[in-house]
Length: 230
Image 1 (cartoon, rainbow, N blue to C red):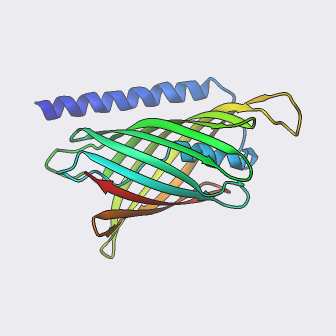
Image 2: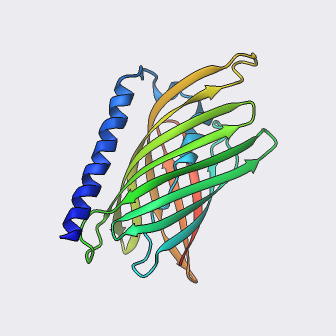
């Protein structure tokens, strides 16, 4: 009974949030094509909603992951470190938190965010599906400030005895650009885009190595994570 109630509650909670998000997107003018989006904003907003696709082990309750994420040259995003933490709330629901404080020769940035990971199925049966709802905030001194919301669906697959995570995410980002064409005025922006996610897990002496590739129509990112569970 508890399992059924938890499943129904999580299912309804997830799809209510999906309905709210897409209703908000429909009310805005989203006519821009992905080719018109600012590559830097697209990649940084993806970083603010990153999460571990590897589940917490059955006998563990907490997972800490250190991700190192890099975009291509077009995006002008260097190597960004992000710390992600997962806490098991129930057998099918995890709470996520993430943060990053980073500076390079271009600017200093601050990232933080939170989210939920929902795993359908039964407690005694591992489901290949994972659903994620993640939000994040990005701030760069005197340059940009944005908030992002991402809805993700991933599935575990096995190819020649190698396990992979394959999925897609839809991202909505809105914020302010403080430095438009070297002018002093600011400009609001709002974009919607989707990513394809491909990742795998490699076990190394009690630590999980999580390499992944994130791709959309003309941008790409590479992410490498190290996850330890407690």
